Structures are given as structure tokens and as C-alpha cells.
Image (cartoon, rainbow, N blue to C red; front, side, top):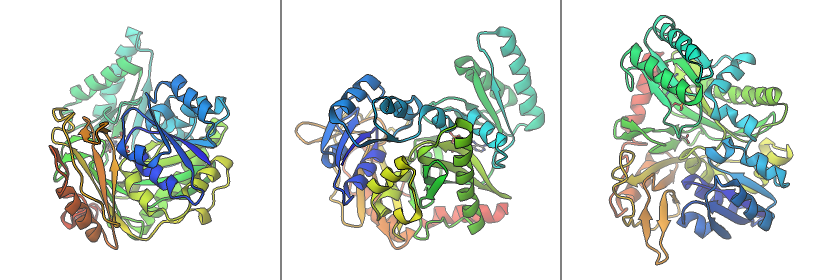
Length: 449
Ligand code: AMP
Ligand code: GLY
């Protein structure tokens, strides 16, 4: 059994480790842009290459002849790497380009749900124009102004409708203070890519539900809560995610059982809608980004891949054979009996350079990690292993440290204690997984409802 793993971050270190635990003892051929020490330790072979250079990836694949590929990051999935690999006879655990539009186009995702009668979106308007036509731009500007002012009454979200590394979404009251600023940003999006989505701004608590999907077969993973803001108390700029937690019952302390059941139902309905719309099955991971609001659950966005850090919490709990799950996704033979998760809680805290995400001033400086006990994991992200073994910081998130325990509290203490022992010009969010922050979410939901 040989598996090609296309990687960019700590998410794929966690994927590689889960694959390597399989009784099938797979050979793992990993490709990433950096000398990731985690991938290098777990993979049988590691190639340092640009994963967006498809001819280079295909050359490696042709030489290695893997049984299948796992593609981790959004960029190659969104640009059609699964299609390109299928062209040389290699199937992937990742959707093809057409199906990946569920992540790459927020307008596609909203319109798909609308067309298939899936009631989970806030009020929205997806606009698509030819940005070279001055008259179309002028017309759209009027339409945007009236939608933001009259329909959404100034409480709005403007979304760049193409991949933008998580940085295309701007909210009123946070990034944009007036209707005019909203219109200006929406017009900027139209000029850049010809598409923009305007949405009602929802109030509530966000969470992620990821599922293994093969067509209409959908098996859910434990629910996770991410923390996108850079600093303690959910302040500062948005990041790729500073840390995450899961609970031993695979739900979250602020969710009702009806909330969880509805989120699961939405992933099923969306997988089926994708198959109907695109005429072929979605095969890979479907990641629903939801928000629990006053009267239920709404969809914020879908991703076509594992989350980072979500995968760092989920995969260490997977006690069944991940390779068998991947094969079942590809063969259309997914079933509940293949997927088992330990009933434990996890807390992941990301170690990042001090300046992240604002600057890359610490890039190239050395970082040292403590030994991990059996109830913890260390997953390496944007970090480079030098030939002398030293580990040097990249500019982005460095490594996720995951504590695993009977309760969130126990898992948090394990993660926190290890994070404090990391040496170098780095930081982490101490509040993630702590009672105070979790109680704040529970209180917010109680107040809303
Ligand atoms: P997205 O890239 O769509 O996940 O958006 C990034 C972040 O913007 C989300 O994690 C939310 O915090 C926020 N966001 C997106 N859409 C909405 C919405 N309709 N209402 C409130 N917040 C939103
Ligand atoms: N944790 C956010 C993401 O992976 O998109």
C-alpha cells in the first residue's frame, strides 16, 4: 500500500500520522514546499516541491505509482489536482474541481443550497458581472448599495467570491464601518474577480462539523470549535486558527442535540445536492462551518478538505483504520462500522511566531519543543528542519500542540503545560479550552435563546 500525500501544513502531519497507524503499514510519499520535520519523520519519502506545480506533482506520482492520493490543502484541490491525478489513473481522497466549488466559490455554495431547498443560509445576494464593462459595474454598485442599506439594514458581510486564504471576508462593525465602505469593498471584489456575495451578518457561536463523504454516504467526525482571532479573549486580527477543542461526547458544551443533529443533516443534504448538481459523487472531506444562532443552525461556509487545526484534534482520536476509510471513500463503500473515534476530549493550541499574523519578523529564528508524553501530540506546520537538525520558524503557524484527556479541562492543562515549555520567539493563546472562555460561549447561547 502506497499513498501520495500532498501537504502544506500541520494538518498533513496529522493526516500522515493517522495513515501510518494503519495495520496496512502504508508507504507514505509526501510532497510539501518546506522541509517539514513531521512529514519527514512519518513519511517513507519526502519531496520538497511546489504543490501548485501540477506537472512536478504528476511526475512524482508517475514515478511512485501510489494506490491513491490524499490532497490536504484547499489551493491544489480548488485548482483541480484530483482531476489531474485521475488523468494519470490515480484516484484521490479530495473532490474534483467542479465539486470543490463548494469551497472555492461562496456564491456557488449559497446558490446550491437555495436551488436544492436546503434552508441554512442567511439572507444573501450573489452578484456576478463582467468587470470590464463599466456599465455593469455602475449598475452593480447601485444594487449593492440598496441591498446593504434596505435589505440588510447596515448589518452585513461582504465576501470575495474566490479563494483568498481566508482573508476575503469583511464584516460591518468590524472591518467596515459604513454602508459606503461596504459598497467600496464589494466593488473592489467585483473588479478583481467579477463576483461578490453580500450576506446578512449573523450573531451566534461558530463550530465545525467535518464528515467523510463518498457520494451520498456521509460519516461524521467529532464536532470542533476553532478560535480564529490572534489574541486572548477573541481579539485582534483573524488567523488561520489559533486553536481548537473537542469534547468527549463528540458534541460541544454550547450545542443542543437538535443543533448537532441539524448540522449532520445539512452535511448529508449538501453532499447529495453536490452529486445531483455536478453529476458525479463528492469524494473526500466535507467541512461545514456553522453558526448556532437564536433559532437554530446556519451555514457560514463549506470547505472541501480537513480543517487546520480541526484535523489535529480529530485524527488522534480516530481508532479505526484511516487507510481503509480512504479506500472506502474512493470505492463508494463508506459505512459507520469503518469509522470509530475515542470518547476523549482534546485541546489544540497553536504555537506561532510572536509577530503572527501581522509580520514575519521572527522568520528563520530557532525554536525548541519539549518531549511529548503519551497523552499529547505535536504537529509541525510552517517550520523548516535544517540539515543540522535545528528547527527554524517560518512566517505562519508553527506547530499545534494537542492535549488528550477525559475532559476538556484535563486536555487543556496538558496542552498548556507543554506550550509553556516551548523555547523561542513564539506565543500561543492560553485561553483556548479554558473554562472561562467556554462558559462565555454557553452564556452567549443562553442569552440569544
Ligand atoms: P468564511 O471565510 O466564510 O468562513 O468567513 C470568515 C469568518 O467571517 C467566519 O468564520 C465568521 O466569523 C465570519 N462570517 C462569515 N459569514 C458570516 C455571516 N453571514 N455572519 C456573521 N459572521 C460571518
Ligand atoms: N480552521 C479553519 C480552516 O481550516 O479553514
